[in-house]
Amino acid sequence: MTAKTAPHVLVVDDEPDLREVIAEGLRAVGFRVSCANDASDARQAIDQGDLIDVAIIDVVMPGELGGSLAEHVHSLGVPIVLISGNPDAMDQEVLERIHCVRVAKPFQTEEITRAVRDAMASAGVLSDRAEPARMTGDAS
Image 1 (cartoon, helix red, strand yellow):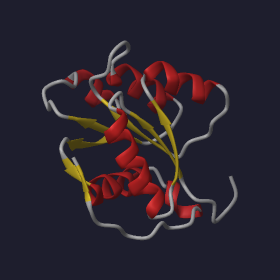
Image 2 (cartoon, rainbow, N blue to C red):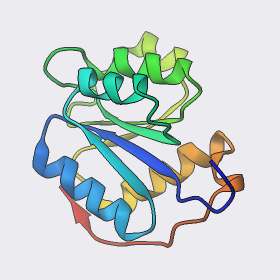
Image 3 (tube, rainbow, N blue to C red):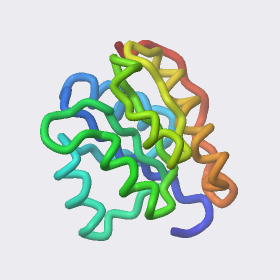
């Protein structure tokens, strides 16, 4: 990616309405967004060379759980935002192995945007990207 390219976010959540609200909110402030239904779809996108700057991953999904996907994405050097309606659902050992930002559902859209910015900033991703604008609103 070149300088001033909009940061690319992969949103992985099995709830289509929430996934779309997150995607629309991030697009509204300048992020490029791709979506995946589950871990399998996310892995397929990544394996096909879909380069991402940050991943938003739901912790509890059918099939492969978000923690396993998060470890894989982390191993690729991609910053992670974990989202969950159940704060106890995440394996503490996984959390200790990966650096991530956690956001509890329900959340405001500005919370998820801030979490994406924080995850990217901690990994130095925003240093050569266009800075998306600020946003406000709800995503619950």
